[in-house]
Image 1 (spheres, rainbow, N blue to C red):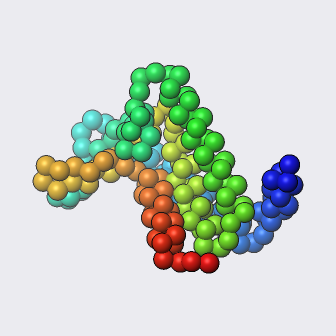
Image 2: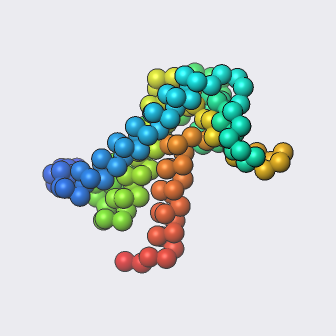
Length: 166
């Protein structure tokens, strides 16, 4: 019960100027992701676009989670994974609310990217990935702008966890 009382008090803190700025960052990341995906979906079909010798733009539809992990043709499993991702996002919002400054920044970045991919899962039933980084015949996993921000947020989180002690 005290968790809910604490959450209610923290919800009041959500509208502090610092939080508004950081939530705005999440929204900006979400819209950067949406704009990039809309352009890719509109302008790319099956043929990849070669940016340079290390990067291609090649639209693929990912029905799994990160890097195609847990891809399935089962609607039940897909919906359960989507529900799980939505639950994790709610936990991230809660952690954002109760966290200190640097952690709020980290969670804001992750939430912005996660929201972009979650939107795609709900609207398109798949996430459009299109950035193909490669060297010769070795191709990294294809990813998108949302994935970049999620990865940056997680890396900062781990670096902060190892090197910054409170």
